[in-house]
Image 1 (cartoon, rainbow, N blue to C red):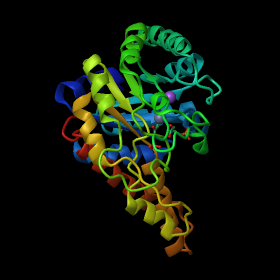
Image 2: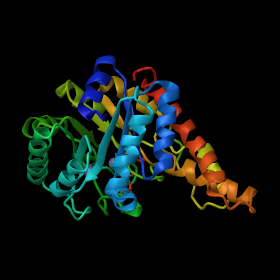
Image 3: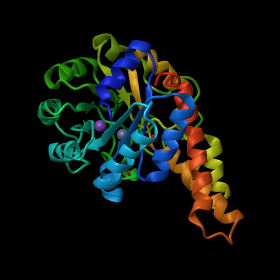
Length: 328
Ligand code: G3H
Ligand code: 13P
Ligand code: NA
Ligand code: ZN
């Protein structure tokens, strides 16, 4: 059986670790996360975006995740909706067996207009009321993810606000966070602390602190019992960029969030760390390599197997780095 996000994050807080939350879209992603969890004895958050639901179909997704729970009965698994854009999206996820939903009211349902604080409180509180009645957890989001260096929004990646944001707008306000959690009753809160979605997070190698650790510390001081969530937390490691570009992939040099920065945030209440881009790169880079090296192959299993294995490596590294390993 699947368990809720609340159950997983409460345990993570007690034992002071974080869980990576991996975005999944198909069988190979689910197998990769579960194999890595099994090898490291880690509890699991599998999350599906609206895009993943549209790509795979809710019935396929639900049964993939139930299949994972059946194959690995000793591993706790949560099925979480990533970036629900409006209450109806969260409700349909609950109906389809998700044990946790994110209501991202930081943007309007158009996905690109920054919402008012009151709108965010209202849609999130509405989802909490319904979800909690159904025994489902809720993650909310306060603040605008975007690039602290440039102030750029995220539209390049198809997500988020398209325009310039001030440093103020790019960091979650600790006092407002306190008010938000009190008014909505969310189980977990995604905060803006300098991360952004997609591969292009930082344009040069980070020297020193690149996230606003100070902001996390202030939020945690104000909300010591609230589970914090970091979005946009792929590390975009050089070896995965190289794997992708060596075999014809086009990507300009970029830098992600170093694992060491995430590790600083864990004692400050960060319990869920969202990762999508790293698995995309692992899968696509490996497939590119296999297409280049074995042009005569046309059996998909011959390239999906190593692609899955490369994703397993990434997942294992994160489970180990975040202290999730050994906690299942
Ligand atoms: O934050 C979004 C996740 O990376 C999911 O991306 O909507 O393209 O599936 P997606
Ligand atoms: P990345 O693009 O850094 O993998 O972030 C994923 C994410 O935050 C999903 O919600
Ligand atoms: Na946001
Ligand atoms: Zn996200």
